[in-house]
Structure formats: C-alpha cells, structure tokens
Amino acid sequence: MGRYQRKTDRQSWSQESMAGAIQEVLVGNMGYRRASKAYSVPQTTLERKVKEALQKKLSSEAAAVKMLGRYKTVFSEAQKKEFVQHLIHLEERLFGITLLDLRTLAFELAEKNNIPHVFNTEKRMAGKDWLYGFLKRHPRLVLRYPEKTSIARAKGFNRVAINAFFDLLDSLYSKYKFS
Image 1 (cartoon, helix red, strand yellow):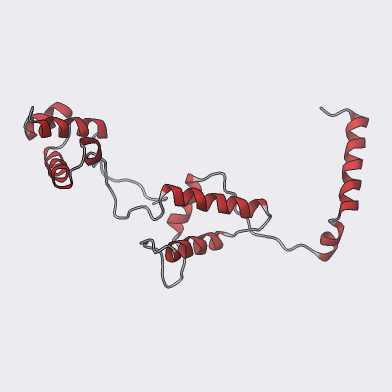
Image 2 (cartoon, helix red, strand yellow; image 1 turned 90 degrees about the horizontal axis):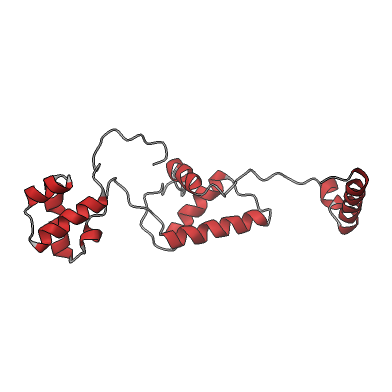
C-alpha cells in the first residue's frame, strides 16, 4: 500500500540466508536449530519453509521467497508493462486520462481478464492506494485533466498557421543566434 508505514521488524532476514539454511536442512548437514543459528533466521520460519519446499517440491531459493502482506499483486509484470504502454500511447495521442479514468480502466482490465482483485465492485474502480502505488512505480506516466479546446484554437491549428509559426521561429533563431 502506498501510504502504509511498517510497524514491525518481521521478515528482517535475507532471502539468501534463508535459502542457505533450507538447503542445509534438506541435504541433512544441519538440523533446524543449528541452521537457524548459523544463518540467523527464525527457527519456526525455517521449519515452515522446509515443510513447504518438501510438499510443493520447490528449490531452496523458491521456498525462501518472502511473502508478507495481505494481498497479492493484481497484475503480472507483463500485464503491467502492457497497461503502461497503452496509457503512454493514449497520452502521446493527447487523449487525456484522469485519475478516476485510470482507476476505472484498471478495474475493467481485471474484470475482462478474470483476474482476482480486491478493487471496489460497487464503484467499479481500483482504490486510491493502488493508484498511488502504481503511479509511484511508473513515474513516466503523467496524468492530467484534459482541457477543452475552444473552436478558435482548434481552427487555428492548421498547416498554414503551424508553418507560419515555424518560419517565425527559424527567423528568430537566425536573428538572435540561439544555441
């Protein structure tokens, strides 16, 4: 969660040391107590991870992965990458997306692809914490409220006006010798 402040020191062990301890126990070189002291990992956690590795036939590295928190991530890395590319594509085409639009798009993406999520089904949008975390992880995204274009401005946006602007710009560059 974006605004969450951690209050405990749970899972302060490193994944490498846990993987080493799991490997030693699985091979039979050490017992639980000795491995937990040698690798500075909690004994009960080591026991649980070894049991998980044996039941699910996981490698010691896969069993040592930290899983802390209530919720899993909604989208996979590939889905997030594709979603960000789509948002950048919309942004490049001057299609303004608001924060509410982004939250609604995320909800619809999860619904259409049958991805399990914890988004608000009444409002049919992702939460603010998801939004702020997503924007924090993807600083390239710049979402701003789309502004209406007046008729005069839209009519002024034509090839003749643009060519006149760039001709004027070129003359200023040559006159004042900007670098």
